[in-house]
Length: 311
Image (cartoon, rainbow, N blue to C red; front, side, top):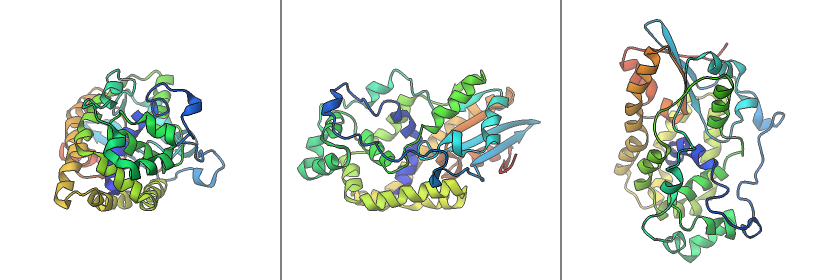
């Protein structure tokens, strides 16, 4: 189920902006900070400059659009991405990202509407495991939120704590006074994933923490190495998917719901932006190397796709 975690990585950045305060509570009663892990800083061994970024150029009709694959946590954009990646943001006509995390509908989309309780859904044993992971106060804050929220928090907890890459890139675009185009609504992103995630997924992740940490480490290692084949191979990992009681034949439908359908919906928008002068497009790396990926779909539309690994 690494693919499960990789696919939802595209949404984690939207959660980072609100993860510390899903509801307002007394900080002293919130328990230990579940995100108080090592921060990747310049000089740290894990914060070496990436030499083979996930950057492609898509050429058609004499115009170039840049497509960059992001991991939304675990890599520090300012200290680890090559300068030539960041510089292209300022030269592109438009900056494109998946969604606006300031979407006012996002907070409501995170709330459960069925009146249920995560504590009741998990049961005493797994609620205790959740408290052990994020503290009793931390667990309580998620009791009335959708299961996806907890799953994303646990997945993010296994990654080095860094500024969200999407936010850092968007800040660069704003500083360069580039217009920002959003491919979809953040609330719609959650709506796409929500039907596929329930308490069983949280239980599976809590019961297999070492495996989850190992898979997250493999994800970051492959990203830092620029290994697109290793990342693509991760889409077949279904251990946690099966541990949640699901059948393997349902996995392709999940991938198509959270990746394939969204990728196909983005293509007309990207074609219009390209025709208007090109853009710098920053999306989750799974959208560029996973099933029905954006690069392949653009190639089918007559774009010439080239990996860019040097200035």
